[in-house]
Image (cartoon, rainbow, N blue to C red; front, side):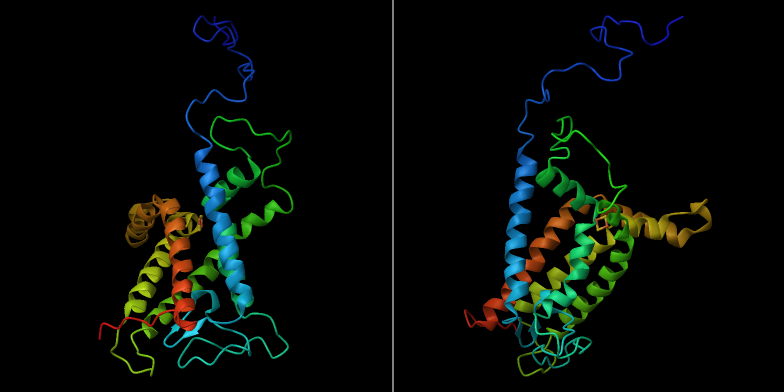
Length: 273
Ligand code: FES
């Protein structure tokens, strides 16, 4: 009887060993390094831009637009925003940028995101750099120890991200005003904010934790038709999670850049009506 450990004519006689003895680091002949290199370039560009903007502590409001990096503005040193979602939760002792108060939530959400984890583990730590390419590290402890065990907090950051998305939706509604805060107006900035809001929601709802919250722990989908339907919608979004992660990252930066250019007087917001 075959035991599964005998040499086999089709596998060079290595069947039964734990791994094929391959001297090369990998056998891939495609440009596998392109994806991790592009990831590093894209994430670094965002980190540099967002760090500069978060510490700038200025040029984040041009009526009726508030930068998503600074909303909700929770510090006493926020610029006055008519009708804006700001509250002085952080007192006068806070002298740093108000963006540093709120950005912890979306930053934590993205840092612990399943997709971004894969992206930066591959891009920055080469762990592993790509499928079927050996990693340079000798030990692997996964996410079972500090600090990576903190990645398990993702579900809680998801709840926070829903709240932040709700605030950004409110901000987008406020853009149907003009600079004198009169309703019934629309400018190019309104379109920029609406697109960003849609992408932020799509990314947030495509989250794997969201999919589990909506459709997980059920024995019979047939007994939960509403949750089954919602699970189907979330699953369709979930299949595009990577694309939505990047699209929303770019859109939130562009939205902030739009407000910055208006606030610094580089151009004025084109008004449709
Ligand atoms: Fe990416 Fe939750 S898995 S946001």
